[in-house]
Image 1: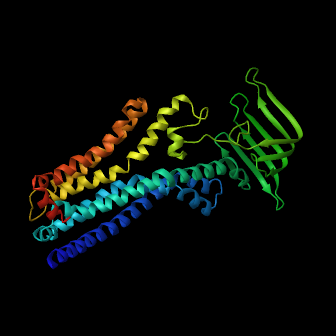
Image 2: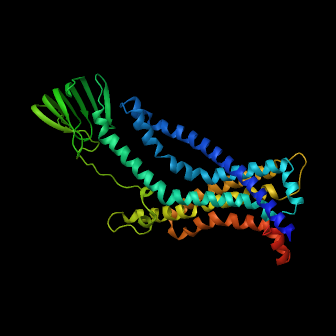
Image 3: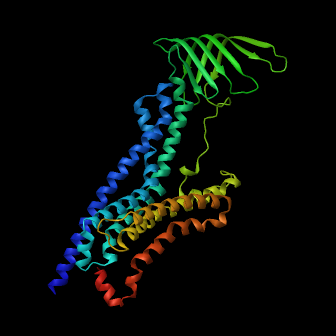
Length: 384
């Protein structure tokens, strides 16, 4: 009886040995790839720092809110890369050969990778259901606040500051008490009434509402499109809001990425247009189904690494085939999502595309062992 106990202990040590390598590689690869993606994506917001005077602290706070979504997207891919790399290395170092000689079955060899896939699936579910929607909500609110409120208070002396896409503000000088001198505002928010406003003095009005500037001793110049005449209106005092909308709107529409699963599947009446309902349903099913791709990609890597004949100098065909298979699965996932958005009857294909590769690869990997008598299979799986 001590032999089975000793065998179980050795199998447990082998599982721990392989799993440690997989976890370390997963954290290293995922961390490096997330840092690279964050760097490339954050370049979109450098303009806020360079042209609008946004602090680096606010810049990092804004862009760091994108990281959870990056992790959720790349985690299934990095899981595949790690499983493929580690198992190919084990095969090249003959460690898999030794493990098979010790009596480990395909299922036992695949167990550490499947534990890693289960970890990745759990992390993806945590991110997709709770973390990513909350991070996206904070990101869009912060971005909205910067572009529609805070940017107006970052006016620099002697610089033409684009407060929004259709409004530019110039200030010649700003006093310590906040008084502005030599103000020019180019206001193109109303396409039919493009105006240029000049004022000798002014002051920014901080409030919970939209940012406004109080102008004194100035003029508003506007060309009448019908007559072509220049209309000039002088004023002693005038107030102008600096939001992107000339109506001073401070609310924003929520994106599906910000909504919870319950909100996506059961949107409140009147909040979402009927034409957007299919998009919400597809987003909900995509979030729930996409974590299974971590399992499917892991099985693809295992089939490439654990099946086929052993080659002394290794082989490139099976790893290359695994990579191409994952690329095809990623492309088909995007295609199925787009088709389901057009026709909600195709939503089940989202689940099929995410789960079917795992089922097929499971049969390719474990299927030959299922022909063994049940009791022998249990011994080999040990619970192998």
